[in-house]
Amino acid sequence: RATTPSQTRSPRRSLCPRLYLVTDTHLCGGPRGVVETALAAAKHGADIVQLRDHDATTRELAALAAELVEALEPTGVPLVIDDRLDVALAAGAAGVHLGQSDLDPVAARRIAEALGRHDFHIGWSVSRADEIRAVDAMPPGTLDLLGIGPYRATPTKPNAPEPLGADGVGALVSVARAGGVPAVVIGGVKQADVSGLVREGARGVAVVSAICGQPDPASATRDLRVALDEALARE
Ligand code: TZP
Image (cartoon, rainbow, N blue to C red; front, side):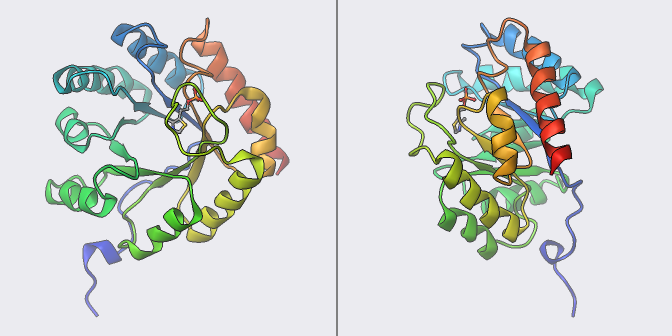
């Protein structure tokens, strides 16, 4: 039986990030700080960077996205854009990260494929088991990564769903692992949380304030990465 492209193996490099940086323009002190922080993180242990800025105009976001794509290119660390498929595609970013109220990932995949972006990375925020199970109903290969959270309440995203805590994260991580889509845990994650989260089954974490706005983002990244690598080596 002939297979459609969505039924064949994904042409994309599978990304199982251990350390995922999500930027915050205010915490970084402005767009210049975002570029400097992203670059420092990319050089010191982050596997992927997400540009997240809900206050910038579309024009400003697109300009910052293009600048980040260029700055990160020599590091090989991919850039994804939060919420905005249009900006991600226009800037030539590696992918997009979508929330539950953003464009449906199936539609986003269809658009990326139609534009020939067979390498496009799509991540999705989930905070409940039924949201993770919904992935099974999507064409295989629709999603590359799940962001599970929030682990804790965090001032970085005051309107986030109810915090999951360690037990909630453990339960959702096991649903995600059964579904076969890699996941990272987000929301109030600090270096001291890493070993506990890994014991709960997490294989990667996403952070904003543990890197952005730290006096030395490079060493904050390095310390987080060492904590993650050590915790994962114990598993
Ligand atoms: N999604 C769920 S919580 C969150 C996002 C973007 C913010 C996480 O920020 P921090 O500073 O790492 O707690």
